[in-house]
Each structure stands twice: as C-alpha cells, then as structure tokens.
Length: 109
Length: 116
Image (tube, rainbow over all chains, first blue to last red; front, side, top):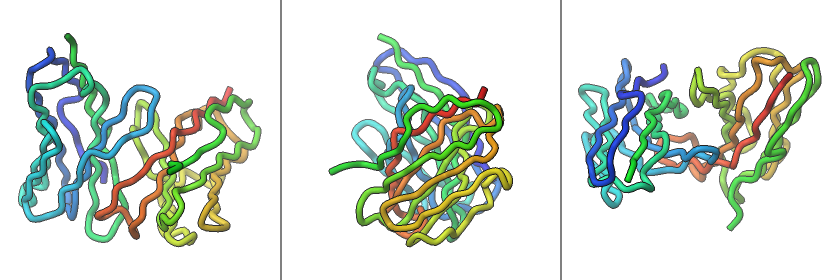
C-alpha cells in the first residue's frame, strides 16, 4: 500500500520553513525519509521506528505518529541545497519499503 | 568505499529487444532491491533479495521481467521482450540489514532505459 504524501510540490524562499506529510492506511512499523536531487539517486535522511519518536538532522527533523499512521518532515530555515524531491518510505511489520510519490521542494534565493 | 554500482547508465533500445541491467551491491550488504522510477508511479519496488535469495518479487510487472542474484556481489534485471512502457529509471539499492526495517538503503546511480 503506497503511502500518500502532501503537498505534491512546495516553493519556498531561502530561510522559510516547510512541512511535508506522509500518511498510510495501514499500521506502520517504520517510516524512512529520502531526498533525491534531479538526475541523482535518492539519499537517506532518517528512519523513525514506531514509538512516536522524533528525530533531527541539522535543520531537518521528523516526527512519527504511530496512532495516526502519519509522519511529518520539518525543514527549518530552508537552504538552497534543500531543493529536491522528498520521498517517504513505509514498512508494515516485517516487510519491504514502499515509497510515496514524492514531494518536490524548490528553494529560491 | 565504492557505492552501489549499476550499468549501463543509459540504454536506448527498440521494442522487442532484450535488456539486461546489472548491479554490484556494496560489499558486505546482504539485502538487495530493484526499484523502478517513473513520473506517474514514483519509486516502485520490483524485487527484494536477501542473502542472494529472492524474498519478495510481487512487484515484478509480468513474465517479461526476471531478476537473478547468482552471488553476493552481482545481480541482473532482465526484460525480454522490452516494450515502450518499460521506459523508466531502474535503481538498485543494497542494505546491510535483512529487509529494510531499520537499515538505510544505499542506492546506485540508476539505469535510464528508453524503449522506442
């Protein structure tokens, strides 16, 4: 079951904040976040395991609400380098990773 | 350290031809994944190997697609015969853990396939 990401696209000015959401219709074991720049491979950002934890990576953090089967990625004080497509990947129990369709983020000067 | 290596990086072929994509995972990783990426469908999992054994091939579109992993350092994805709708970027990824539950996936640069 493919997770649903929102919004589909975001345009920001440098320094602004953004939130990307990921939701599933099934109970989740873990949520993974990746960023892909145009023409490149997806690159790992972070993993959140069930337990409602929140993680941070520089000015990028994420939360995982196990009860709501949702995760959110928070980008604070965005930089030009944050531009790209963000994918959430979800796993249900002992299974492989299913990715959402992605959220395109463009940060302009 | 070398990352996941895929070849070819670009492939243009005509409908009906056989296509073979290759992947060398990171040494020591025991899980290997093949994904297909298109604008319409995003990143789709095609097949997952653990310790060279196919564990989940439910994402393989049809019998025209086949994948093998003869040893821990090599995997192939074959399409025969190829069709225009197979045009996509095919990614290989490896992970040091069984399954992708807690492990980071390391992606190769991808193979861009165009079927005319």
